[in-house]
Length: 146
Image (cartoon, rainbow, N blue to C red; front, side, top):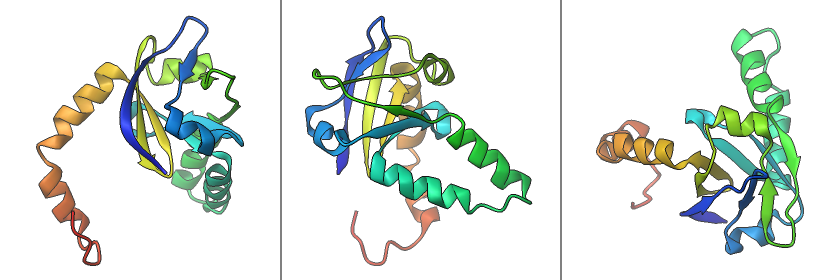
């Protein structure tokens, strides 16, 4: 399980440290790809396989299905961790997410997002004030208290 937010710096070689408590779950392999809202998304290998299978079932006769599959799958790259718990983020993904130095690693239960720190701060600012109305629009959580 991935939760929390962690602030890191990307080094000159494109390496990013991952939180110690995330490393065991990602140690068997991981995939990083373009995410929504301008971030990158990192998946443990098992979770990635589940997502990729779902993307493969999107209808090829629908342009939105083809476009979304291409967006996620063509941007994907296998990443491994070195002994220091770092992954290398490919340059094309760093460019996509505008990641150069200051980075935020965000745990979202079954996946990890990697953000440019300024973009994350802006995203939080834009959305925190409307969290109540967003929750209301999402509807019932089947009795789950938040």
